[in-house]
Length: 147
Image (cartoon, rainbow, N blue to C red; front, side, top):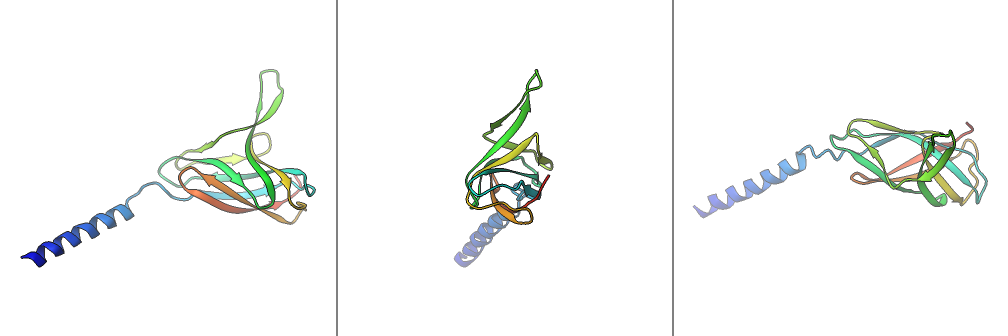
């Protein structure tokens, strides 16, 4: 009788583990497409742009970014006030709703790459490490190109 109880307990544990691993937790990794950055001199600054698509069933958020090619990377947004003046300012996070995309483009969300450790010449790339609240870090290569 005892071996039967042990088998039943093992089967129950394995079943629970399989259900936990196969459940739809919505933790799919966001995709980042069309990543590019503006050319800039060594030691200077640039801006990077891309499209984030969240295939998960739950929302996620871009909460920070780094790059081996820059000493500082920050998430920024450009906004226009009532008088038509535009201003660029850092943001703590960019929400990416479930099943939707957010476009980082000139005049909107973008990454500021400051203290570049090398020249960003047209035709080259820069590595970006995008950190998401739930999905973790996604590494992408941004093409350097003129607007």
